[in-house]
Image (tube, rainbow, N blue to C red; front, side):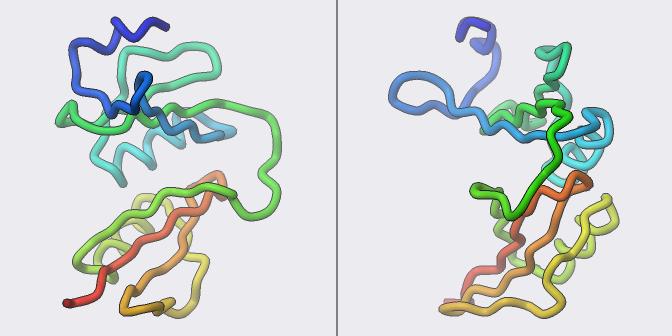
Length: 134
């Protein structure tokens, strides 16, 4: 894929090109339904085969590229998404309603930050955080 393909939308850039987050999944459609509901993204025309691109509905931001794989997930993700919100409980409930699973039974509190760890339908972890009130 050339970078020219993305000229019609605003992409998240880094110093030498575009920043894209890639997430492994066993089921592209299930993952797309979950992540579009959670992030407010839409399916992009790019994809095919084992890939499905999700982009912000506004056109601005980081592309999430879903990659179908038969590899089982093992252990904790070394990298994950953080979703920062002003209403932790409401956002966690919304993500659970979309198919997310809460992994923490109690709110984690550190330096004024409050969060829960959740997982998507493939078991990929994400954190939903509420910043300190300051």
